[in-house]
Image 1 (cartoon, rainbow, N blue to C red):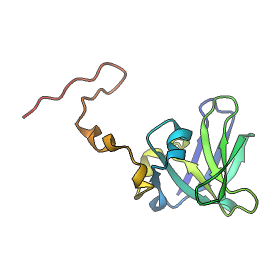
Image 2 (cartoon, rainbow, N blue to C red; image 1 turned 30 degrees about the horizontal axis):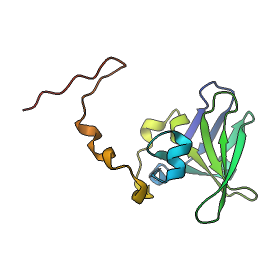
Image 3 (cartoon, helix red, strand yellow; image 1 turned 30 degrees about the vertical axis):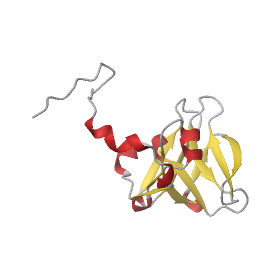
Image 4 (cartoon, one colour; image 1 turned 180 degrees about the vertical axis):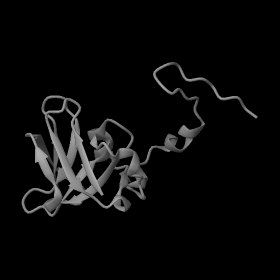
Length: 141
């Protein structure tokens, strides 16, 4: 599947080919902090299909496993874009929130479930709103 995306301000864009069945949700605490959210949804892409336009900034971290990962983000708007191994990378891990096709990339698995926030499973029972207006409690049958 061909995907393309960009940061919020549009200074950095990219495209790649992905296998949508490899889309996952990561609940590790690093992903929670980097995304500012309770989890991060990602999909890997072979490095040879990845095209980058613009110059992201990078932050290199060392995972619990000892592996190094470069976190790419826009230096202007701060959007998290992708992760990549330093050196001879064979793939790039795209942050699906930046992709135009994000609705089609349905996660097929979850990792670091031990760090998953306990309240995530209860979201489907909360009052909803289609926009920024206050949520309306659902009538109980």
